[in-house]
Image (cartoon, rainbow, N blue to C red):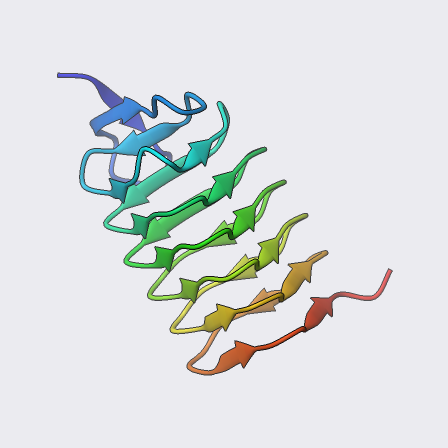
Length: 131
């Protein structure tokens, strides 16, 4: 059995490198073959990542979240908790999306923005921290 330590305090867990990109995926996660997970990106916990999602850089997807459609998570960005990220959403730089957030359509979240809570962003939206 192959294991990987995701540095989340759980130590090494059963995991594999994703065939499309080589990033590490915990065996508890559901990740479609159509998803790209770059070599330094990780998926762990029990998230569902599907369709044509693109994870690159040091991106992390973890918890019980859902990431689908053509969403892109890259840089040092994180999606976690019970968040739901769909559409052509872009989350990048050091941005974090968690809690029960729901983001869809053409939203861009970047910089050091942190979105947590139980609300929805649906439409062309740009959320960033000031330069």
